[in-house]
Length: 106
Image (cartoon, rainbow, N blue to C red; front, side, top):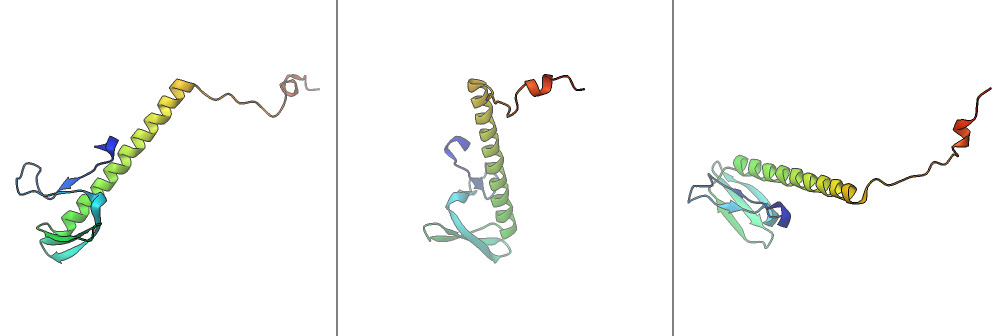
């Protein structure tokens, strides 16, 4: 939900009832516990061990961050384009007078 800046990923398939949804904005840190477990410490200092490998968890964190960055860039670009369409280009004035360029060189 990029408009409200809500991003999440699941630890397994989205259709799997055992899948757990993680909101990266609430993750303070995470570390490997075992080959198939990752300890997640949340910003409120609560922690929990999830049944997902550190590698998978880290990849999902990175992908979600990348998606967030790309969506923010798209929103920013569209806002600039909308501003330009509504307000038109800024006019600017040259520091030299036009007569300088109209003189006949000898």
